[in-house]
Image (cartoon, rainbow, N blue to C red; front, side, top):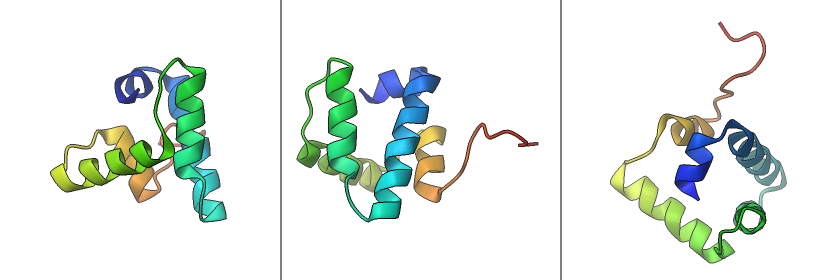
Length: 81
């Protein structure tokens, strides 16, 4: 699923929406990502989402998109210079 998101701007926007909603609510990231994955033919649980994010944080192998989501960046917004 990670590669699919990195290659598809629509999926990136959906992930961004899920991350923003989970941040605002203080929960729901794992369930939101798992649900999105299932709608695109992937099978992943909420627990696997959290385990994967923990692995990414440890090895430092994050893409620009992932770094922006972690840092709260707003890539591609209207008015960006």
